[in-house]
Length: 426
Image (cartoon, rainbow, N blue to C red; front, top):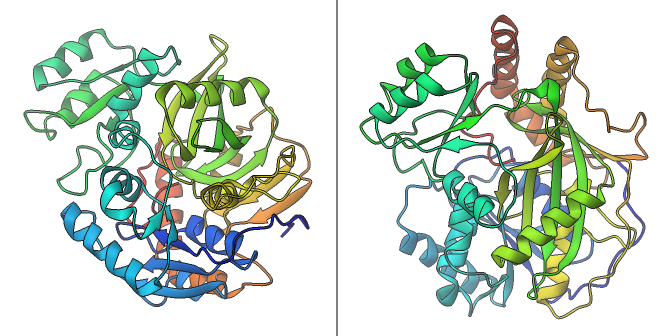
């Protein structure tokens, strides 16, 4: 693993707490945040599903709080639990959410949490709108940001009408981010090949379908780009990075399996302008798709929290988005520097099946460097090996499932597979 020797001077008296809601123990983003701040001497704590998650066994973790949640809990109960953790830590602590539920909870209950925790202050309803496919689509339309064409059917009759005029294939996604409280319409990003398939699926979506039907951007004519950023209280970027997603799992539809840092000033400007217009502050993980057919970048996702692959990105001063957030909220200056282009990020437990799937399809992003200047592994670190071995021990079942998904995807000709419970946010 390649790491920069540069290390910004942080306030070591302010701990960090990884906050997660839901069961996804194999989440490398939380491990990355624990290592990122822990290597600087910041005391790190984490909410974990049990005592033997990879994050719980990091050498850089000062303490774990075993708190299994499902995402179906009432918000007041979750806030009470966080405040109890804050009392046990005993001093103001930086909150680092790893999923939309946690990010929305913090924003909507900021007044209750402010005495015990540090976090960026944002309009209370904004993270929920950004996490919603419909909310994000409406924000893009309002601020002139391209996004895939989409409809939001209110009934089966609406879907029948759409099926008669739509250009297939199309993509179906859950309209809202928080589907754990009820049965989701679709298990994940689902490609639909024709009107008959759409109407057959829609019969199970109930009288008020909670789906978005979206234009399909063919992967042969598209490039997947990612932006990770931390925006300050004045909405200016404290750190902003751009990169290309080379492989994902499930193929072309899921979490990042391999990505590279690639300079893209146009995309950086687009992202910073959109964040400023909507008034966003804090850490964000954006997914863009460049559509070669019309030469435009189209925004697919705006996750109002750190992304699992954030450790791909670091500037020459040793700053990533998590370090930038800690520095700003503790009153420190965030050192500037160019992003370390050419770095590669690999998620060991999913990149092998992804590599096989992409080799079969023959797809490769044209902007990926032929050779990496350094590699950041999601799980393995020589100074912190236990999370990697714990991941391996817990991946036996998921690993077999990945291979079964790969075989099924091959039989279907590469159709996207849904993200399964337990794999967590990307």
